[in-house]
Length: 135
Image (cartoon, rainbow, N blue to C red; front, side, top):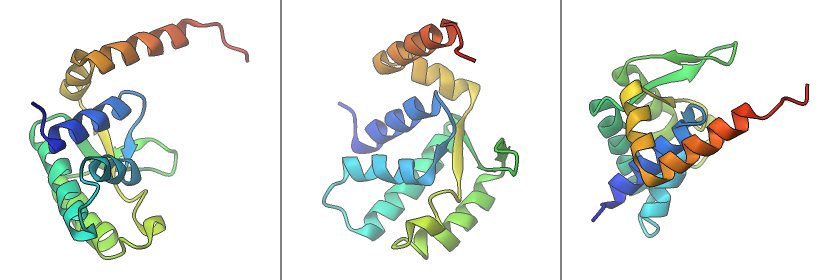
């Protein structure tokens, strides 16, 4: 049986198959698994979920550069940024929703594709990419 954290992690990894995942998405997935939790409990579980994903080598943390590309940074740097934005200004999502991004590692991509939903998503993405462009 999957725990709430495992379910949130899997959903985050599935979202990450398409693009890097921003904090609002991570927060949302954690809230879906803990609907009656307080804000402080959500924040703590969100940070622990990120730590577990990074610790397992499934994602790296970072931010979007001026060109829109993912710029990796250490987990410690990201956690400091999240304490200053996500935790300190939780009631102001505009202050934190773009403050940290998660990008799947190769191991994270492999894990996501190994799930039933991930396999379906990968197949649909490959089909979509093979369609002629309307450019």
